[in-house]
Image (cartoon, rainbow over all chains, first blue to last red; front, side, top):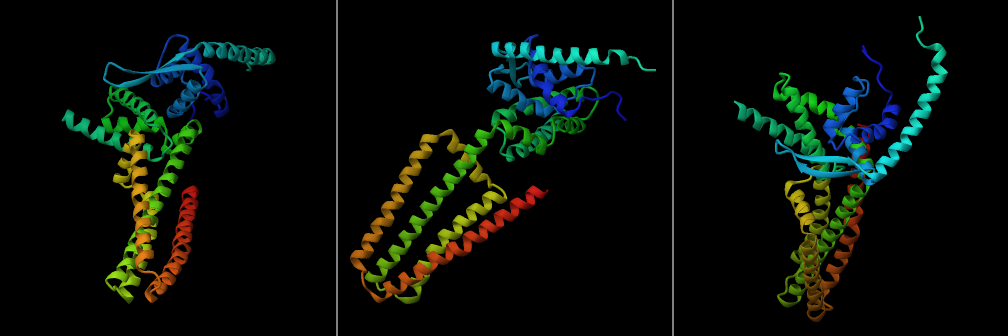
Length: 117
Length: 236
């Protein structure tokens, strides 16, 4: 049934904050666009259940990782735009170190087994 | 054609939003944000050739069910949810005090009338019991309608109270002052005018029966009903 392996629930939960922060380093964005950007970048492997992103964004706002602002968009729609904060950048650097440590370790472990017949 | 479609879609979205609002876990801003997301997604899907209804179905499905969203939003909005609950509880206490004072005013007036215009026997007892039961049953009824399906007037009253907190607080203060003055004032009338008559004794006995009986029957019944309802909604 599945065309591509999807991320497990736990991994999705753990990676949401670094993914959001990373996308926001390219500039401010809003929920719908964030979801689209992550889906596109992951080649469809990361599929958030869309509504769940907003509580995470609000938690990040409370923690000061992002700053948010309501603005009217072109179509007369009120949108909440999120921007990464200084604290967010520091948190992202920290996250990056951790994810790279996991990635490096796993890569080394899996090296002999790549490309099975 | 286009406009009737749009009105239909707006109505569907309005109902969808009301359904989420009813869960009581989302702030108005949260609902605004979700609605904008839904409309963005509908626009995108409609541009691929889906009808507005189809686009709505797919978009709302992707956004998540009310149940799933409630759980996630409840985690971040804990403070707001708790504050809302406490506000309703305090509102209930104020309503109970108001009703109690009003009913005791009626009782006192009946007793006073008993002394001055000789309102005797049966009518007096019925008036006293009626006033007390009215207060208890109205309170129970308020709890019942609030839990079953919050009526529109109560919903808009709560919303306008939130918009004008100090107006609300001062009208509650004035209201309480007024009913307290009424019930104390009429009590004084009774003590001055109707002390010691035989009817007063009978009425007082009946009154204390009601005061014991009403809470003993009505509140446990209501509590049992609430607990059962909660258990069933959790099991769903």
